Length: 318
Image (cartoon, rainbow, N blue to C red; front, top):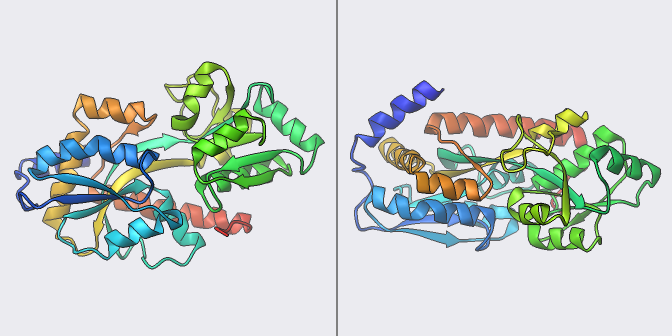
């Protein structure tokens, strides 16, 4: 994969970025509010993309309906490369499995490039539990009394909580929030027992000693929190799959040469140490793919989340 990607980038970068019309702005639509993780990531890339594409790149926030509004805006835009979607995996590989959407992520959008990968973390107030084992023991001793926060019904973090309930054999209550900040605020206030979250919202509190990280997802320990074990190390491998990504998409029908041009620009941006530093500051790992590689990632994710949601059977966005 790396060899193919390297060859693709070399050929595409050498084409001098000729497809995008110089002077006509590129809109980078983010389906979340300003300040959200996807917004931070989009703005990290916009300035470098503008230089590479030789035109202005404007980040436009179109939040609402779990990302559906922003995604659909891109799906209905002209397929000329001047309107792109920049978001995380949720609106494209989970939301369409739970709700009727006006777009088909595999038919109405063209993957351009994955740019970063991130993990999920389970946190509690430091006085709540010293380990995941202790937390599970508390939940088993008090069925229906402990609670977990997520960023909303049908979110990846909601699905994680329901998966923990199933694999640990516990009864905990889901409390949905409209974002990570209010969720973490209530964990700090001990209004909710635990939260599934990302590191952006939790790391400052972990470092301050007010939150305790019990476990993370993924295939390896995360550099920012090297002492936090993987769920699989603690006997819950089913939760290691709860990872996410950020990437760019174009409307279906965008010319292949334009797709390759934008993908090459994004991957060229990822070679910039300043961009990589900003991605890592958002507690994500820079990646980079060809359009074909990213399309395969999307197909694989749709299949695995579809299987899991059928197994759980009790997830909805209502």
